[in-house]
Structure formats: structure tokens, C-alpha cells
Amino acid sequence: MGTKPVHLPVLLDEVIHYLNPRDGGLYVDGNLGLGGHSGAILAASSPRGRVIGFDWDDEALAVARVRLEKYRDRITFIRRNFVDIGEVLQELKLGRVDGLLLDLGLSSLQLDVSNRGFSFQGSEPLDMRMDVRRGETAADLLNNAAEEELADIFYLYGEERQSRRIAALVVENRRKEPFVTTDQLVRAVESAVPRKFWPDKIHVATKVFQALRIAVNRELDNLASILKQVTNIVKPGGKICVIAFHSLEDRLVKRAFRNNPDLEVITAKAVSAGDEEIRRNLRARSAKLRVAAVREK
Image 1 (spheres, rainbow, N blue to C red):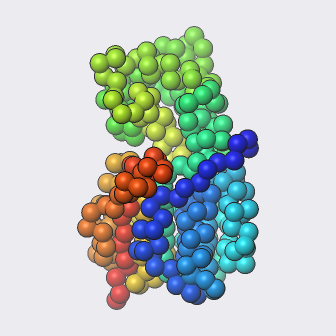
Image 2 (image 1 turned 45 degrees about the vertical axis):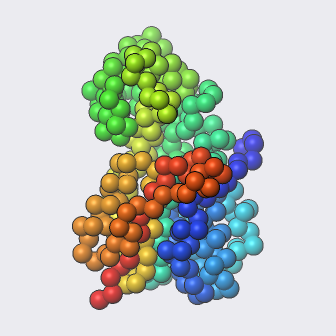
């Protein structure tokens, strides 16, 4: 897998504060990633606390298994998407859990090492699948979707205002040569968007890459689905912690928490990383943590 990824779990102290893991508790980490949050939950719930860790990225699971080896008797690794948490808990004959964490960000492995097109810093295959066993790749989508569909994906999932210009150029370019690598897409976006519309703080292709990743992995559909299930997964008094990294996810979480009468919103406003954490880990700057508790009946 190449270079060893540097792993800095975001908002770790805040997650542990709100989740409040205890000895003997049972917790679900719905996006295990490289295991940073789960390791802290296991440490805080020592000596008998347990974690069920979900991730559909096999490479991330392999790294997490090594990192969490000392907790091997207290963690169960599941290669499934978090949308299947309820089903898996039934399969394992476990009841509702004491807490649920969903960290919706990409891991440093996916961004820096995976070579699946999550990053556009170099030239990588346009894959973007979290689970390489599933579905179409980003290249498939770019090369086969209608122009209108692509424009809608870029606008709805990336909030990209130049979506129609970009979609039109993608369709024009793919007639000459199919999209295969990330640098091809970067060049297309840079060509499609007039310089005066380039953003100041992010790369001009950032929102398009975000949109494609969300579409390929059906991320918003999966998030909406799990948010409907949380009261069947977490026992009364248990906490649900969700870390979102862009406004589409955060709005979904905010609405789901506020509109569910069986949930008590714990964080009136989303919790953000402090200056010190952002200095250590620039990716934390866009993280927003929202917490709710299942109401006691």
C-alpha cells in the first residue's frame, strides 16, 4: 500500500467526552477507518468495553486490525457499510448498543495512499469506490452518464455552480478520449471554469471530486438510511455522534436529529475543531460534530 499513512482522528477528545465510554459498554464505530476513534473508545471503556467496527474499505480494515491488535479480544471487525449495522447486530445476536459513532470523512489512507482517485494531487485511476467489490467507478460514471445527469451530480452533491459548463466539457472530451485518470478530470475542470470563478481557498476541482465520490458510493442515501435507524440501534440514554465534513451531510444530520421525537439533541450547534487541532491536522478544519441521545421512555 506504499507509504504508511499518518492517522490523526478528528475531534477525538470531543467524541470521547460526548460518547462517554464506560467499562462493559458496547459501542459501534460505523466508519472504522484506521482505528483512531475506536482505539480511544476501547481504552476509555477498559477492561471490558467492546467495539463493533464497520468499514467497507478492505485496505482500511487491514491497517485497523494491526493498529488495534492489543484490543483484539474486545473488537469485532465487519467489512460492511454502516447502513447494515442493525442487520449485523441481529446476526451477532447483540441487542441495542450504548453508543454509535459515524465519522463521515475519508481516512488518510484513502486520500494519501489508496491510489483510487480520492485525491487529485497526482495521477490516479478514477475509481473512488470505498468498496472495490461494488458498482460502477467514477470513470464509468464520467464516460457513460448523460450530460444533464453529470451536471446534476456536480451541482447537487458538490454544490458546484459551474456544473453545466463542466458537464458539457466532460462530454465533449470523452468523445475524443475516455476518462481514466484523475489528472484528466482536473484538466477538464480547469479548462471548463473561467478563472474569475475559481475559488480562493480550495482547488477548482475539489467540489467535482466530492460530488463524484458521493455519487459513486451513494453516501447521502446511506447516511439518510442509517439516521432513520438509530433509535433501533442505540439503547435509551445512549449517544449518537456524527462527524460531517461538508454542508450536505451536516444538514442531513441536523434535520434528522431535530425531527426525530425519540432523540434529544445534545449539541445545539455543531462542534468544530479548535485552532490547535487544526494546526496539527488541517483536515479537521471542516469537521462538524453533532450529538444526540436516545430519549428514555
